[in-house]
Length: 402
Image 1 (spheres, rainbow, N blue to C red):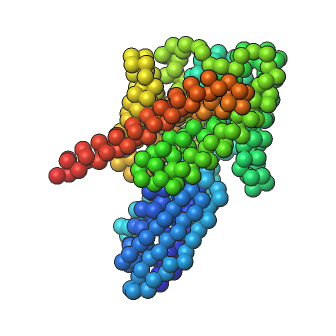
Image 2: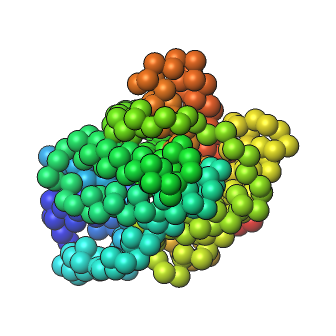
Image 3: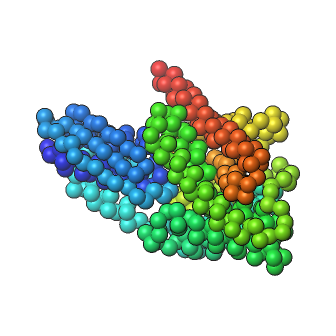
């Protein structure tokens, strides 16, 4: 059945903006729209996407439709729906179902139920507590961070449309900073630095830094720059919110503990499992991505012990995570992102980003430059590791096919 160019592009753009909202990388958005349009007879497809906008032009039977633009103001990370949309796009390329049927499936995916409220809060607690201990905090610090994360997550569950993104993040950080200080005042938390470091991991845009550099190195310079600027603005809001109350605390706000290797691995397992729940990963993928997180974290931790070089150790950890994600994606027929994002979470420079902005706001320029340089090296290590491993896997697969 022949469709008009406008009908084809409407469906393709709807799916494209939905996967963009789920946290898909820009290249995946553009490729998905292109594949769908060509599946229904488009002879030429040109797509331009950034995190807040998609613009596309297609040619079908000599008819040009050039005015389809989709705005996107809500970028989150929803790995379950991302996987569903990926399967739908594969089905379209393979079977070419009617556009009416595709619209029904899109509607069904939108209406899918997330994890229940209890599991979402459990994910927040596991994430905050796990990262608190991962950074060097005690068990009491981990409990305090978990309790603070519950209060922060309550606010995060509110409709973001009530506030703009900066204000929403700032208020959430103020809540986290205030109650982090309260837990230390009452004696539950032992060290404010680690309580805050764990609590902020449910909102810190550390992953966005690595993704933005990855986009830039993949020649998506504009989208990468937009993501990078958004991450910097968010980190400023977080630092301002936490600093407002951290300055009331008499103790030092700094991370300097030495953590045993077995504590690092166990806490990374807990944190990755919790973060996978927050990202709405599928039930059957939770143990898989948790194990991937532990393995990639072990590669990062032990290489850092041997080399004492943050760039190289993060790059090695990212390469291990990417290779596992690429293999699992092909075995389980899912997007690589589903396994990659949780697996690299243990060494994204989230806390480092916060302390960089915290020291800048408080005038500690020397420490600011230290964190700034380490942040840049860690982010670059993530991007380089992902790209090198992706290229390596593609070369191996092509060689095997030949």
